[in-house]
Length: 136
Image (cartoon, rainbow, N blue to C red):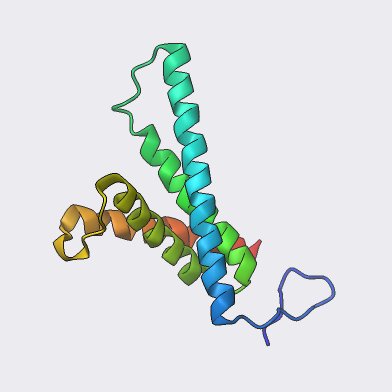
């Protein structure tokens, strides 16, 4: 059994099962969606109230990456181990879910270089959130 490093009484971490990982990843993707929606509403309100033209600035992508890290953090906190893997899966599944909602299909057979780069960035952002979630 693994032990938590930052715990003062050196308590044991409960054993992780497939169900633990599955529900942690589902909750992480849902958290990523919620943070992404809140970020989109916030950016839209700033654009509406301030009259700024921030469409070209890429702020929606910034909130999307922050949301993947937040989802990876939450999923890793739930599993308490393998934060990079759990967070990375949250990032990849979040991007696939957003593509599915935007285009109506996932279409993994037609992945080009830009899609692979997006999936890689999603994995990295989710993994960073997962590493932070396990260690802090």
